[in-house]
Image 1 (cartoon, helix red, strand yellow):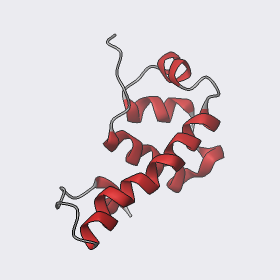
Image 2: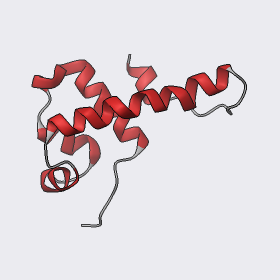
Image 3: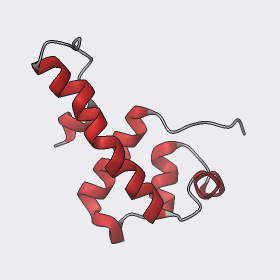
Length: 89
C-alpha cells in the first residue's frame, strides 16, 4: 500500500467522528475507515494512538478556521468550496 498522508477532508471527518461519538466512542477501525489507512499505518503515523490523533485534530481545527473563515472575513482569503464538516453539523 502506498504511503499516504491524512487529507484535510479526512481531518474534518475525523473531527466529526470525535464530535459525534466522543473520544471513548471512536474506535481505531472507525478512524481507519474514515482515512482509508490501515490501523498499522495509523499507529505508524501516530504511535500514541487515539490520544495523539485527537491532539493532531485539535491542533488542525484552529488552522482550518483561520484559513477558511477568518481570512475570508478580513479580506485576505479566497472563497473555498463548502466543507463537508459544515453540512453534517
